[in-house]
Image (cartoon, rainbow, N blue to C red; front, top):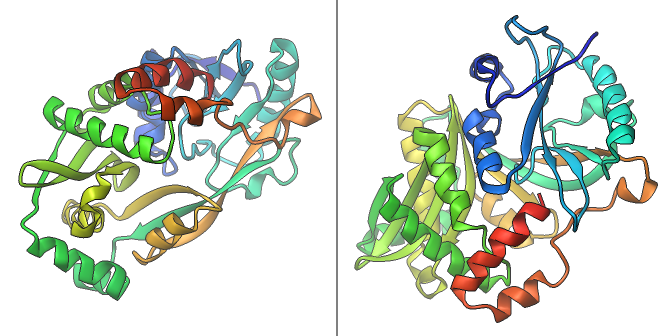
Length: 346
């Protein structure tokens, strides 16, 4: 099988493939790829067995991350929970693995990383397991009342009813005004966990490039933003990607309320599954929170190929010192630091 390269941002065949492939998600959309390119300057490329001029029957998309700090590498895809290879059959991975080995040596990449939802097809390839996470999903095909009954009774059902009695106002939009409020909450949340915030431009580009497929949901108390989530959509699936809140108002249960609104509205719009996103395996609090929605939890494993053994299984963490930097910087400088740092950690 011969492989061909293409630029998914300029080749309209990529969008056609994503629109029809059953494994495609919001992370495959050109809007997400364009956000990565515009914000961090990553070069996007895809591999396919379809010759130029013919409709794409398969594809595997990457970003090339070039960094003088963390080294150059090929990732499918940076800042993405998972990116399924859009292939017709698993045996195509053998040819792709050969290509990865050759390119990794020729271009002196530190490694090439794939982030498939299912890693079963990788057992006989030279790619090795790297990081692992949990990923939670909620099937929405049941009636709404059954979905509510599937929620943890005291931790979610009662808290959602409590939130409904608190006079919270709810809004869903992609407006600049809501984005500004969302980013203020995000800054607050990231500081609480001593993490640098993503640059504001990331979210501005995301909302612009994804269009109607990116939405912010927010609750306010007396006009003050309490909690917000940002979701991505592709056909019948919604992905929860970002959440933030003001801990001074946690007693109002704004976040459980927002997730229930997401379930209600997604169900009404014909969505059949909500992806609750990846979770670090040692984050027991977040794992329990997602479990309590009646989700199905499964292992998500990333795979790497690297010429040097030390690059193969080492998780690529934040740059050293970023937590201390976050604690010391005021918000305006913290956001600017995020702009400088994040492109190196994709």
